[in-house]
Image 1 (cartoon, rainbow, N blue to C red):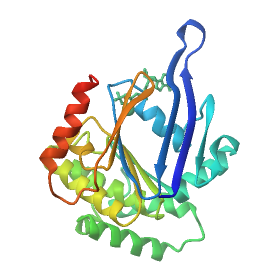
Image 2: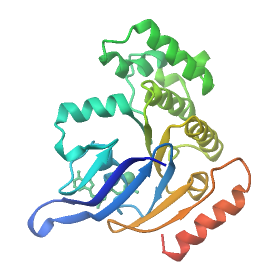
Image 3: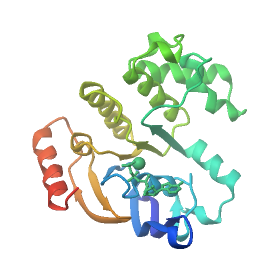
Length: 252
Ligand SMILES: Nc1ncnc2c1ncn2[C@@H]1O[C@H](COP(=O)(O)OP(=O)(O)OP(=O)(O)O)[C@@H](O)[C@H]1O
Ligand SMILES: [Mg+2]
């Protein structure tokens, strides 16, 4: 598997002087093209910070990260934001969407910044994705008129508009009930099957159990990882058990 992201000895601190807190302590991480990976760890262990740094949303203090063979440290802000917009997708716990736009317009809005693209093409693309995740009939609705799970599906559509190489999810199922969470995970599995890498942060063993590699973080370090075969809908109980055992073993 070709490497999509290579992070070496990543250091990140917040605060200064006596207040200084090391949040990432020489973390090295690799993510392969098309890989499906999850990150678990206690609150404050540095999961979101790690995701922000390897995706170029935040700067590191030391170490290096390459994305698709390009070094993030050497890139300026514009270059980084272009890279994020063109090659990465982001899904957060609560999708941030504009209240005065309907679902469809919220999905296509970020892609409209690339003025090379025709609006008609974007609408077609958005409708294709909305159909795939089962929200096509909601395109005209306001974002206040849909459920949390439906809104998250819209967030996923938005993240996929530019055919990213990787989708980053920071607790994308964190605000959902377990049925919606499972449906959202089905969608991520589907995206991954089509070749897009997915990296997600989660506190939920059931979510991590569907991925093919789980990293366990604590105090700014990756303590351990487990590998699992690609999820094919089978053996979910056994996979959850495996993840849970590891969580207990290292005290997460
Ligand atoms: N912008 C910031 N300024 C100061 N401290 C920060 C900042 N961002 C994160 N931190 C601190 O860094 C540590 C790691 O935060 P991070 O958000 O990465 O944790 P996390 O593992 O994602 O936790 P959670 O599971 O609660 O989301 C925490 O102690 C947090 O308070
Ligand atoms: Mg977090």
